[in-house]
Length: 402
Picture 1 (cartoon, helix red, strand yellow):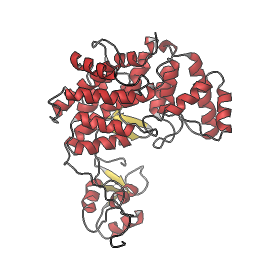
Picture 2 (cartoon, one colour):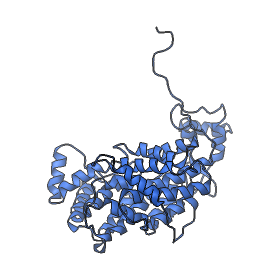
Picture 3 (tube, one colour):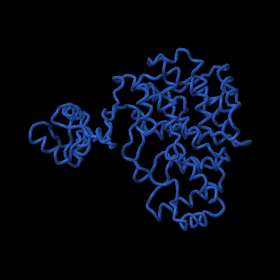
Picture 4 (spheres, one colour):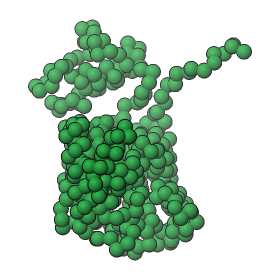
């Protein structure tokens, strides 16, 4: 979205994409009086009122594109702009100093409170733990989360109430239940404390709770990622919150989404003793150095930047040898390839720096994203139902061939 003068405005490229036309055709529409162009200081080219473009998109004079979304998804949850990540207009890096519960409640309601606590039912948590004892010992954490969500849902008979107040309550209950069920911890712990208990492999330094808390907040949402789009589609069918979260978990399970930190962890584990040698081996094999660059950010990933900053603070107790190796890798790769570390690199560094479970990055990513998915579900429940219908292009055998 272009900078505004109080209106919602689209750039020429955005207007063309919405109308399914070429940018030069947008100006033809202007000359024919179908669109009104505006100039704003500091903005290159013309901008167009979003409501006027939306109105034109529904007329026969503008054809819909054959690919892409058939509905415009408006959201007040997350904005990514100028290499910054904002939740409801607040910088996510600044919010990462708050508790995860407070930020989750904020993205759901717009109220940033200091004393937010989520509570789980002890019986439900116990049933979830019993179910988890039946899975394979090496079961992935995302599978465990999926099981907890499914089991917990069966104990919530009013989950089908998708009213705002009910969904907010259920979301808090779900996050507390998942956090408690994944570990064997007291229900009096905060969400971050319970998550820490589930990922540590021994007497891990509790000072790691500070970067863990920040990681949960920074991973809570990132706009309309693939899993979030899946959540919006599920919510448009009026699926309840637990089913909506299950849809998100299904999408996030891919190696290009929730598991993207795995190759970073494998690489960094070989780089701790000799990062230069590890880089040389990786480059010699012709493989890319994992954990760098991003499809949205061009200069820096603010989530990675903040998490890595916290890990460098000695008071937070991260293993200095891991941090030193990570910094060498960052310096070498950034200087040679003009790129930057992303959140996958930061999560992998965090995991190795505290000796946590190997699947901690995937676990943190999936768990934290439940907060963002809830915010998007709440927005979608206010939209017209079943509004997503992407037109397909048939490429099979034509009728009458046989």
